[in-house]
Image (cartoon, rainbow, N blue to C red; front, side, top):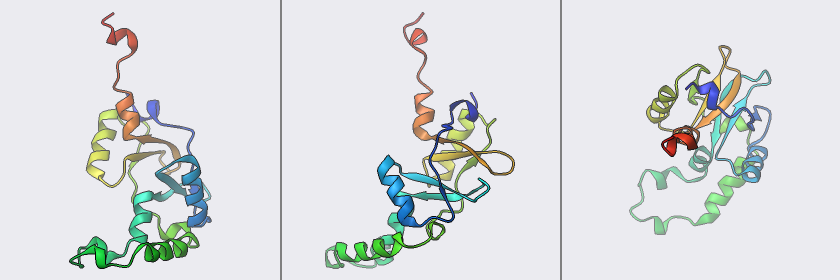
Length: 156
């Protein structure tokens, strides 16, 4: 089975001209954890993920363990302030410029291995030779396609 056979062709994306607030609103509305970021010509510039957003609003000294106890760190007020600043920023300020890109004719096994090796996202973007986005494959899409058809499962 190839990537093009299971990729989701109906996907939401954002463009480089939008703000983080616009993208976050779309992500919340549609319960998405990732949005591809596209140039005006449809080529992939990167992805924005909930993880990349969280990385921007949680102070680095908390993440790196520079504090002996996080209980002494500023409360959610600091995160809210960072969040408020972030939603006004251009989408490209939070874009991960190295998403996992795969070709339409790649095998399902190859895509699964690439997802594991890439390690940062659970989505692969299926692109053509010019890096125009054709579809999206999630780890869940791969797992869903491993289930045998009902006739096979019943031993027919």
